[in-house]
Image (cartoon, rainbow, N blue to C red):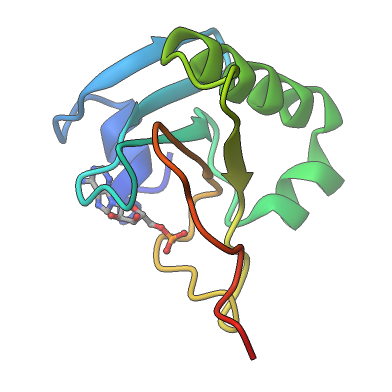
Length: 117
Ligand code: AMP
């Protein structure tokens, strides 16, 4: 655990979160500032700064993360109309929290993936 990491502290239950799904290796909780009708963050319990570090170090937990994200999408009723899973990675993507997290977004039309050029 990284004592300075917000999401590690959520895993340790030092900071509250609205948990919607938990496995041995992953945790899913509602985003505190939702960008869609449904906005859930899915994280590995172990600390990796971003998806590159996770995928490089632990392919098995990477698979667990995707499995949990799709389970959340099913539980939240998103699979019929569609949804988005995204990983902001690094500065250009605007990553703010450096504990890898998948955003699961849906529950309404999400618009274009990026602003039109
Ligand atoms: P990113 O920009 O991809 O790093 O996303 C970080 C996300 O974490 C943002 O959508 C924030 O709203 C969310 N967030 C920050 N603090 C918390 C918190 N305490 N509980 C839940 N979500 C949070």
